[in-house]
Amino acid sequence: MPPRDVTAAKALKLRPLRRTDFPCETLALSKFLIGKVLVREEPRGLLTGRIVETEGYPPGDEAGHHRSGLTKRNASLFRACGHIYVYRAYGTAMMLNISSEAEGIGGGVLIRAAEPLGGLDVMRERRGVEDIRMLAKGPGRLAQAFDIDFSLDGHVYAVGQGLYIADDGTKPPRVASSVRIGITRNVDKPWRYFVRGSRFVSGPAWLNEGESQRGR
DNA sequence: TGAAAGATTCGCT
DNA sequence: GCGAATCTTTCAG
Image: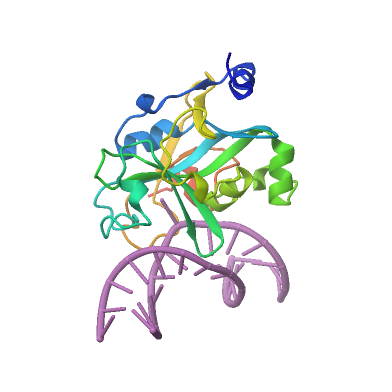
């Protein structure tokens, strides 16, 4: 008989994706994840949110943590695509990534923001805010709302491991791209992807209107 | 062993 | 809207 989590997911009409369903290429995976549902399994129930913003850090990208080769800290980025990489930036914010290239090649996708769908009370309690738009808008907030920590780092992505991605059958949203946020190298590469018009996307408003509407 | 940088967030003006 | 807080890892000497 299936675990309770799986039953609950079924009730939400979620179809958990397997690791083999992911495209094994950084930018393809970045776009693929937009519109999918991030699911966190925890004792109090399922936390769910639709992914509305990602950033790709392909092999050779000077802005990626894998730029200086394999180290103890970034080892997860060099694992086969579908491994979870978690790290802390600026001492306070946790970031959730998924490795996106073949074993031995450094590359990853950062999940930057999500639209909360289920488990809102738990998220509000963790985040200490009521506004639904503030629950998972930005990588650090998303990680806090979904209780992401180092215990997930290095795990192979798999359904039933506490964290997975699902498809709820909705049509893929219109995806726009822009330059990435918060980096100092390769700042001109348009490897950030987001749902145009979503209020749950982080970053300055002018960046989220889409590159085609910037007027130049 | 020390110094510097970093894929951000929060609070205050 | 702007500036400070915070901590781990990495690189250089």
